[in-house]
Image (cartoon, rainbow, N blue to C red):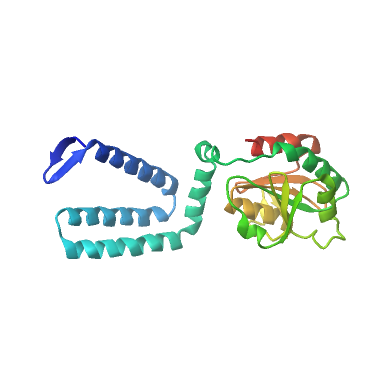
Length: 255
């Protein structure tokens, strides 16, 4: 590799400049996402410790370098433990990017008609339902809370599961591609009890809670009113008309 220039004892190559540019861009992006949180102060401290560690290694201060590296390892673990919510949000932002999702195949077009037909009947009969459509993230932990089914999605199967006499009607079903993976799954409840002035029931809080944590779309049918809602990224789209449901799902779940 051709040397570009030297700064004292440091030799700088083209690869070094590219490396520095990538790291600088990453930290700037990380800062822009965390600047309104307390996590940014800890991040600054971590960057300073890493910089000092690099300097001490360059000038061969072995003992001080070892201490700084040990501190940076502990600091990094503390950052991950203390700021799990912020890190989770960052991962959700990354997973929703076009570049990331281009590697994740999500086939939903084949199931929208079945779901729309089933939801229409559930809504008309005021039968409560929770339907989860994972997008770019693995939902294995949620699947493990329920009963595995691994059955091809059909309107009739959805209606059977959410029938009040069915032992599987409580909780949510998980749909991946055209397969109902599991039923009676337990979703985490959101801390929000109201949304835009509306009191939230357990199903809506569960849908909202899961959407706050992972990249998924959660469809809710209210048992009390028969209304249809969709949770996405910690937001609720309330009172969706059945005629618009297919368009809403397509816009959120299409490749």
